[in-house]
Image (cartoon, rainbow, N blue to C red; front, side, top):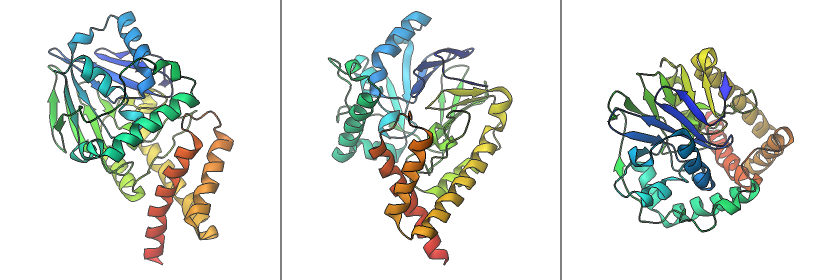
Length: 301
């Protein structure tokens, strides 16, 4: 079953935000942890939701970045500036990206662009939401654990969607947080998202498949529970293979990375005109994806 309604997912786990972009809050016995940062325009809504659900903001002691793309880090500067004592975790590569002037510029510019597309620019006004070089934290990598008291967050390195992607798994509640590295549960389908390195993306999915999962916590379009959650990664593996075959066939026909990417973008918005990403952002995503797959095809020829 899928849901994108803000509220309690299960005991000690909350989903906050909107359908197209959400965050998760884990309540441990000692401290709470925010997993993934969503879009910056969520700030006033998330604060209102926390108040409505009786969630104490002062109980948030930790936050975890799953990867450094703009639509997954938007709220971290907001919460960190409100409480500088919060511990913020990310992969070494994510911190590298978020310290680069170009990386910071992209996060902020794309955040504004999507806020405009979604009609949410008013949520940005008068709030200190943008990334700057004042936000820092701790590196985590494969095998690290974050102990919240009664809940243990295990870190798995799952590159492919991005070079900095990690996933989190909480065995006590069998909850998996793969970010876009698990595939996006959009409109009854699973959208593959092997943006950076499609081969690594598929390898990372296979790495996640053996985990026992009752709750699949996606960053876009909500979470999945029950029987569907238990088979979600297996279906995501199949969807990724199908998408790769389509990209390969299109590239073989066109012989052009640009033409292949352009066709794929048209296909996306013909079927999903309300998808939250602006077409110009998706065009850049597909150019990167096709470039990797084209290199793999050319190398094997």
